[in-house]
Image (cartoon, rainbow, N blue to C red; front, side, top):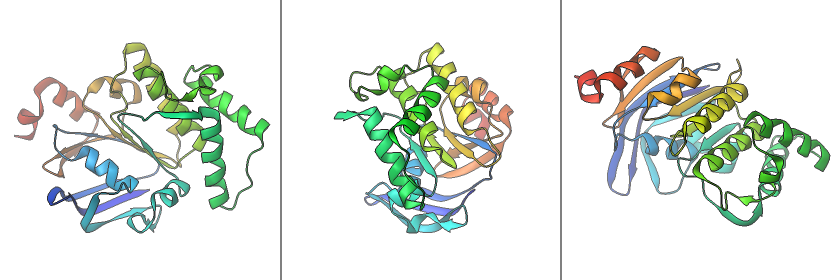
Length: 247
């Protein structure tokens, strides 16, 4: 699904990723943990194609294609979804309008027919139900006036509607209370736990992993992957901290 080899990337003149290598096969939920400044968000932004991040060496292959050669909208149409740590507000645009346009734009890029209004609303209602979100919320402006938990739930509804092959989720647990965490975690499982899908889940804390239950956990430090293990690695980090585990 995703193969990253010896990836180096800089922001301005500052090198951030320094030889990162990682493989995420189809059917896997792979968690990335690491201290602040390790390069987790930089990795997310490089995969998404955010301007200002320069790849200086290495390669990224997504479903057999050179991901770095694609524009951000092309990456999305190929099945890459990026979940933000801080979802942005889009005043004046309703969630329903935004999501229908996004989905049909991707379907057009793949040579598929657009969904009618009725077909889309049926799909949106189904995915909103997984996140316990009322359809009235989706009629509101994108994230305007939403709490932190509502923004993350709305983003997971967006993920469900777009139906990506790979979801890269950057600290999805940020700003969530206990109940919202369980709902979002259950939504990730319902939408992305499939043999043909994969998740790269970036987090600081074990609490989301208690719900999502990753197949593998990697530690990112100093711009590279320094250790990979099973779910027990996250438990060690929670109990002992990064310095003790990496030592």
